[in-house]
Amino acid sequence: MGKIKFAVVGCGHIGKRHAEMISRNQESELVALVDTKEASSLGLENYQVPIFPSLDALLESNNIQEIDVINIATPNGFHADQAMQCLEAKKHVVIEKPMALNKQDAEKVIFKALNVHKHVFAVMQNRYSPPSVWIKEMIDTKKLGEIYMVQLNCYWNRDNRYYKKDSWHGKKDLDGGTLFTQFSHFIDLMYWLFGDIQNIQSRFTNFNHANLTEFAEDSGVIQFEFVNGGIGCLNFSTSIWDKNLESSMTIIAENGSVKIGGQYMDKVEVCHVNDYIMPELAPTNPGNDYGAYKGSAANHHYIIENVVDVLKNRATITTNALEGLKVVEMIERIYAA
Image 1: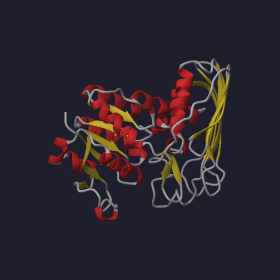
Image 2: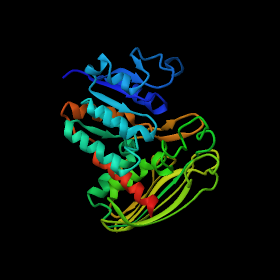
Image 3: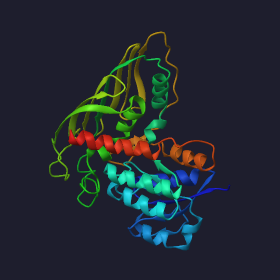
Image 4: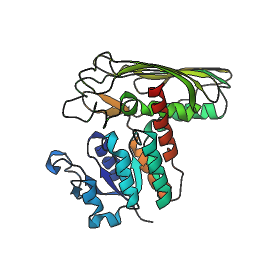
């Protein structure tokens, strides 16, 4: 098998990140881009590939024959429908988070993928950060023993520099809400590490986004129990002044305590565990830089590597469609509680 050939749909910040990582990988090739904006305004001069004005135009073109994978990096509300179109064309799909804005649409994507025998890759790149890989191994090998309590804090800045009037950000049908767009990566990490949650109690408020978004919350306090044992809470807000404050996870367990902190859960701040010496971890990639605001860790090269490895039968999917579905379902339950 030669190079895996990709197309990217949506050429905003994240779409460009996908295109860059595809171009850097020696076993992948970028062969098409899609965006509704004028090509001259997109800043894509480095890519000598066809740029299509719509996904329909790409799927109807002769170029579609050579494409193996289509990466969807459009506004959230388009993800599920566009994934269905790509699967109907018998293409593997990489879907930026969230996979969909409701469980039913995510289920339709999975059902279609099974019918056409194609892979769906959910983008949850925070799993690749060294502290995440380390704590996953700690939990899976029972070094922490029984998990008692988990506290997840996500305090970011998202003000009028992010929620612009001409942007899809903040629109209910395209954005979905704070947990979908800002913090689904961290809910994914929590599910990956500790499993499902139940007996959810949620309290939301809107401190300073009433004139910026169409949804009711910019902050929340969520309490729950883990199905596998232990209790947890998620505290989140996008009302932080000027810049991101932190994304952190504190774990209280039978054999010790751990806190992973920093703006993007990028550093182990506390590791006090019985009969255990903390190893030195590789540095975490910085957060994606969008100018006035920052996002999660810039780990998209790992996503592309995983797609290539899976299609060349060297690996399994790091975040599969069922896990993408589960994050959507958990967020829906949190909002409904």
